Image (tube, rainbow, N blue to C red; front, side, top):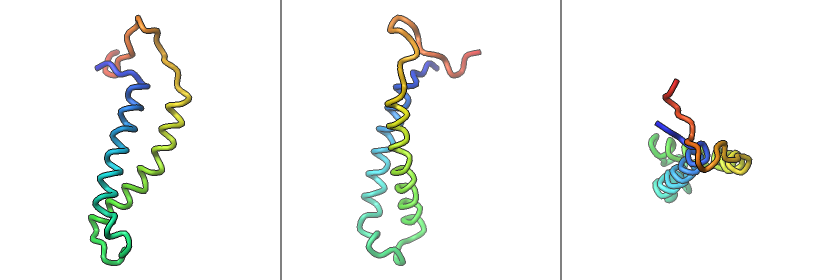
Amino acid sequence: MFVDPLSLIDETIDHLEMLAEMFADETDARLRQPPGMSIAMRTCRDAQIAITTLLPKLRAARATQEPRHSPDQLPFCLNCD
């Protein structure tokens, strides 16, 4: 399986942004009443907070990355020896 690190970071950011939006939709109405939140809602809220903390770090990592290969070279393989 060939993976380009820049593509992996970009895809991860996209997926985490979508997940954070889904968690926000699930917990938004109940955030005003934390004592009434179920365990599942608290878990969603905690996950959303963790994702919100992680996204800026991933964006910063993405900004510092340079392509490790020229356009005519293949990306590295995660499962190859």
